[in-house]
Image 1 (spheres, each protein chain N blue to C red):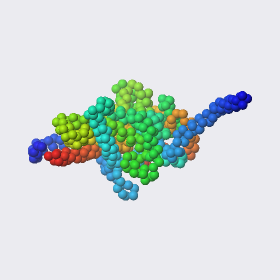
Image 2 (image 1 turned 90 degrees about the horizontal axis):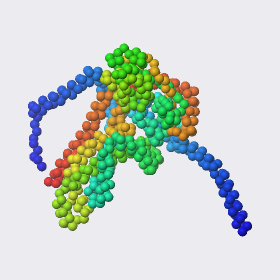
Image 3 (image 1 turned 90 degrees about the vertical axis):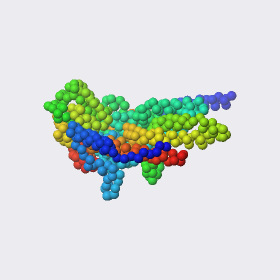
Length: 294
Length: 278
């Protein structure tokens, strides 16, 4: 590990900050004067937290959308990790059949635009799967209390089919990238490690799980973190099939208030918040793993 | 021998009888099946009416609580109430709303959909319950001196509208020489006009008039009134006569009450609902 260099605030930093602030100010000024946009931030507080009729605090539209985005992203990461690890291990398997299957999956998903995939899935595949599973009827058959719980965990019964279509598409899409991360992680471990484990008399499964994967995992963390951040951002694509997540709620707000710039900027800020939190968490995990290995 | 013969004859008679009655039985089955497959029947069984809609002010928009409100929302609510079922609004992008109906995402479209021949090839329309028309709002500097529809029908004129709407079609039909620029939502189309990148924004009345008032310094109404007249109706899937009949009957009954006209006045001719906006 490199020794941490101490940082200090210098004159150059001050100049840079001034330049950045100036650029932001210039942009705002241009929008106001050239486009003649009259800014109105007064209503935005209400879109995050608002007082409901009975005086209690309730989440506003954008906060609801933000929570929905986080929920969708969490589910997607979970499923994408499962799909990605399975496909990634198949990519380095000794069976040609498994290698071919995994390669086909990865290449199809990686070389198609997610927006088109979301549409295709929602209109054709999703329907067919939902009917086969009977998910919608099942959800409607639940008791009121369970329907509310389902709404918290995933989506209300009526939107369940759309939510699951979106989730499946996103998970398969992100899973393809995770598969490649897993494959490169495993293949980056030196041959000597495999041979040493073999010499100890471990079976192939044991070699993989006890020796190779723990080492590979450390190398996978940075690209995996990047992929998770991408997942949060990519989840905005499903606004096109009206999943009520952050981007969609932003669009809805614009349709009602016509305050385009303020809402987009707020939405941008919320995405930044979520992704930065993800970045910081990944960094801490990296340092912890490095310390454990040291 | 005779025994065998009589049995054979009996069997033949049975088969003949069966063959004759088969079409009748089939027809009865078909009728039952048709009735049970009807969207109305399915809604009653489910206890939930799923209505496809999209956001258009003042047809449907989100209020402070994140609930939908608007003229079409009132219509959908009233329909569900009269059927004695719960209402579930399924928001769908307008450009994909007909495919979504055909693939069974919801039972019907109640979203200010205008009856158009090309749409009627894909879906069945009820009788109209509302009539709307197109109007346009123009940019003060860019469209200076324009005072009638023909003024906008020139090469170099840019018209903004929303994808898949009758507004987009009307612009194409009445302003063929102008350039049409399409957006996925109305605010985006309006923003293009406000930014001075378009000469006019075409939308269903009274939206353009409202916008001209809201942005007095930048926009104006070149001419009053609408340049099209479009009947709005409820759209259902093809091959479902029961649903059509029910909706037609329901519209006639509610129309006779004067309920549609009263709601229309509230949503389109007043701004009493503005305080419910977020």
